[in-house]
Image (tube, rainbow, N blue to C red; front, top):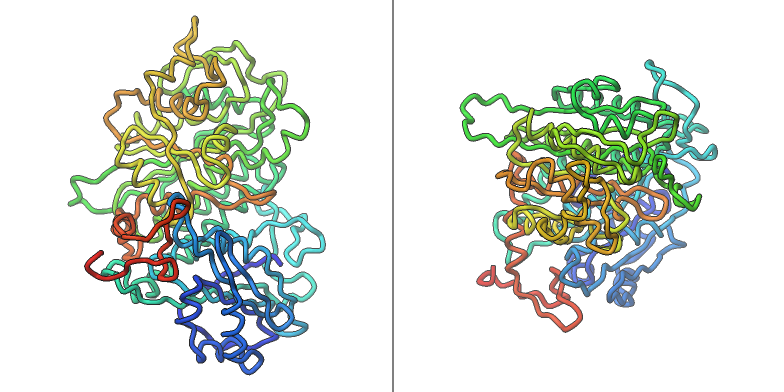
Length: 577
């Protein structure tokens, strides 16, 4: 089922089985103690009794994975999230929630105005954002299946660019697929004001969670769409829509203008593509003349809409499948910019999208070519498949030189080595600032976009790019020497290793997708990283929540440290806060 609408609310609304399938999911102790007969009556009516539900919960046995029990021919169900959680996982267990929702496939009702299902999440206040974001990842928007109720028709928009996806059932225009997500939030005895129940489920909080979910699905849709539809020019149209929605300024530098203005690296990567390369900058400047100490922040995203590898073409043939996902960094930056500005961002924020198709033609960039980046540095090309760092070095240099940014974050599906370094679920992060490394790690746990630090040691690793004829090569000499870290250092070298600002690199090559579907990874992480710049109370409190979580006293074993649930033995007395 392709879901068009996600609706977030608090409490339990009135619905009935079997017309409205319903899943109740949460940590085991909360399912035992916080789901009331009134909640069950509202969702299940008389079909499933409180006694039956209590018996089902008693049979749940989660450990390192979630446990699920279907009820009433799978129209309903109850699931318990894992009770064991290592210290590098998110305590709220959003990945486990994702796995349960992806596997739950209730039958569609035979009649009614909508194909609707309800998901009731029972959680603590600090987990609302991460679990709400996890739900959004379960329901991608894009489908080209002709049997899909949201099948893509061969319809063009007014600019003859984008396919149009209908938002109604093609077989019944009055029927719509939607998911209602309801939070039952349990008070945490150790909670401060920053993670109070009322804050977590206020209208403002639910509105921002809904906005982040919308942006996650936007990013995932862009990544899921193939390059014959989501090419560079189509991506620019998406950026224009976001700029118009949030009232941002937009700058577009296109094609040969990039070459003429000194963006030699970005131009070299994209000049062989059927659509031109672009540098697109969305700018949010708060209108506050009294703000003398306003920070200037840039999020720079790699937007390679398809990566053949260039003349160093990817082999064997199946390696090229999935390279439509190489725009995941730019998609996440665009989605995060949309949510951050809509939530109220009190600093100057720029989204810099570096868009190109790394293609093959008679004018494609060759190995041995030398190009000049926007930083002025010369680059000897020794691998045309190391193109992401080339487009990003122009992007970060523009953020430094023209936008005068104090903080520059680049996000990219940069290296296959990232998956080997930090795995499928954790993005690799590296930075010149230890405080931001810690913040990115903890915000990954708070938002569900997990991260883990990679080595930052330019004096040992940047020598891998040594060239006898240029300032640097674009690919390493030794592929056994921290290649994911080296790729990040290449980008920072165009800022200068003595640059006094904050630089943070986030390599999302593996977590950008699960199987053949995009996850929208990075949207929630970027919003969380800069939550202290938000006017939204829920986001504003996230840094304090992360600090609070770090100080929680949990009972641990040699294998696991407990998640934030009483089931796992949290010491939740107020004097431990």
